[in-house]
Length: 138
Image (cartoon, rainbow, N blue to C red; front, side):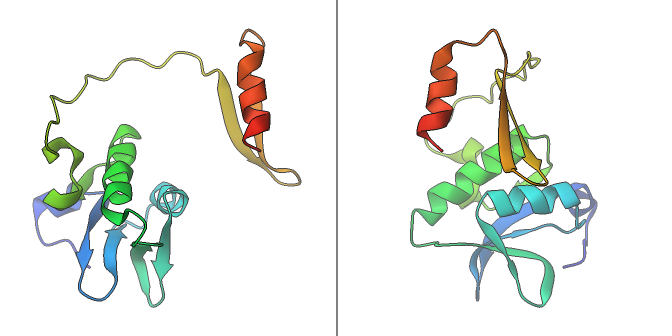
């Protein structure tokens, strides 16, 4: 998938439908961060297509999950091109996009530890409920 227009050169991720693979996302710039995000949003690499990812379990609210993925990718500052069916800004009842507000300090931070796997760190000033919620959800 080679970019053919100036708009495609600006696209980090494109989400749409493929005739063979259903709901897919393309990472045309092969961005490592894009790959990381797509895999966590339940998109799996398509064998033989190094920049193409198919949504896993598409029968399980595929359109809704793809639409949420587009919103999350955009919130993470990716330039996302999406088919109208997956564009949250075109969804019925969608109001104007909220303006970006500066992020404060996080209450919880997640990271991948080489020996422990996924770990979470809590702000000492956070209520004990946050820690309990993390424990409840594994």
